[in-house]
Length: 572
Image (tube, rainbow, N blue to C red; front, side):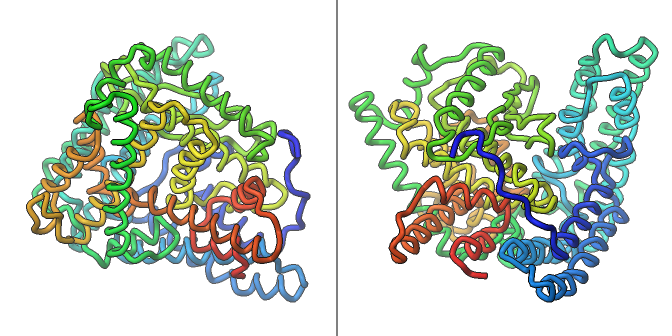
């Protein structure tokens, strides 16, 4: 099969597909940000995160789940119910069921954290909006003015949650208030966005955009004041959500249920094993050097340094393109549209690195984004080669692209309406280890960087489960119950990351329970699943093909890991 292999032959949509399509259409109607992400048309507005807006999502979920049994029965009566339908039905029940549990808990109303709550969504929204024409900019002026309405709705939800006893921890309230202050700054994110408008914008429209950006800044300033003046006094000091709620978040992010106590112990074991691997490489590179000293010397190596944002962008692009060329037609089937990835660098950012998928027609390709904090001008390739594989090929870019290419096979919800962190981030970590397995991290420094990445993810498992489930901390931390201070000590002892980055990481774990472990735990499930499929194939007298395993798995789209296991091991 060539690198330009066409997608799987077309499949006649079934009644189950119709239910999923209706659900996806409902999602598009409720979420302007999703419309922008997938390239769908719609009014120039922002998401409604008020109590009424969140209730509309619950109505959509209820309607979809109520329609599903009749659709399954109809497909069976027609004799068309197949494995694709079985996966769709299982994934819908698993995803929407968990969303309903979280809504019943009030978790959507009280959502406030440093990385994935409405304020951050508003900021990221303007990174993806179209900007090619005057009409695009007219729409963006409307969107900028809508920031106030969205944040006012978010405020209503937070107040309703508070009335029922749910308020985010003080750590999150203070940090998000600071983020709101940054967005309110003159010359900040919104002004910088407007400044990118080119000659297609008239002087009058430019003034309108500048005024709209000012309105957006004012809205963020008011929201930050609301957090500090009205919400902070009710915010608990305790960052933990407790075992019962944590188990629900864990299932949401994994799409599978795991033994939290066993997983915590596994995380500690993984951390020790990775440390041993790093020590071995350190000795081979710089005899007698510790892991930390090795990192310092790699950082000081001029051959492993990039200077300036342009150099970073160029290196990211060339590394991503080289990986695509090497993987296509060997270990993966990569269709022509998926062979394009754009690497983007954002100034004055948060420090995060992330991926945004292509539109359905690939008119906007998949993009890898590096959000660089103000003042950061130098970068170390030994740490970040594995990151490019994680976000690009064979990581998220290939994962999303493979699903979008199933245009005549998967319904729209399966292709673009569902994202399971354990599936997606687990795959991306699996991709990092795969590149090591295939020899792309043969350079000891690059392999050391991959292990550094894996070490961070293993440490997350321990911190996240430890704090939120209030487990007993290791004796090296003084014993007692895990808390924010012990988590910080553990991370500084085990993770080589600049302290401002690490501080953000810890706040992220504390405010987004269950998400951080989904990387390593998802990787574990992916690796175990590959071994199980290989054993199944060999038991049946068939030769195991890594390429076929990858193609079959990625063609399913991002489903919960329990659904993935059933699909690949014949559980339907």
